[in-house]
Length: 167
Image (cartoon, rainbow, N blue to C red; front, side):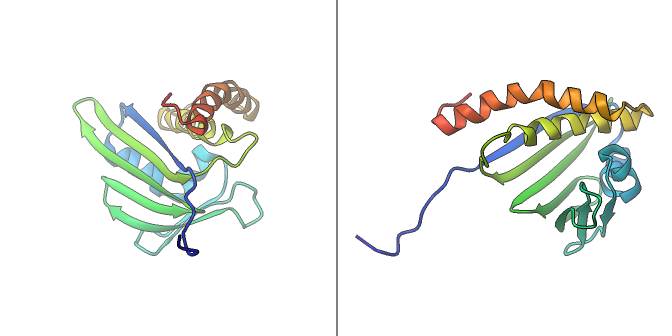
């Protein structure tokens, strides 16, 4: 037996495959322009769109938000950044009627109570993104209610992962 044996913990990836009626160029702008990100995410953002650049969304409004580092930029096709302890990637592909995009956040571990808030939050953010692209908006209360409504669906999946069962 080797005393230097490492430990392995469960981590998970959240993946969303979505269709937009907007072009990859339009979606790219919405996920890379700080003003647009601020608009649909509801928090100040900073983006230095180059490998090694900053990708910050200040969810708490105190200048100490979720600070990321851009690690991959393929103009209008792929954006990757390290965000906290995880890796986030957007992949965009034009289609005849807009674009298809895949979003993933990899390297997440169950942090306990309310972990379902993270995937439900992304789901709700994509709805905000759709609204933003369509020129619509919802109130903060509507966003909060939608987020709460989505959480049970994601809790079921997280519980299955923890039990080692494929949902």
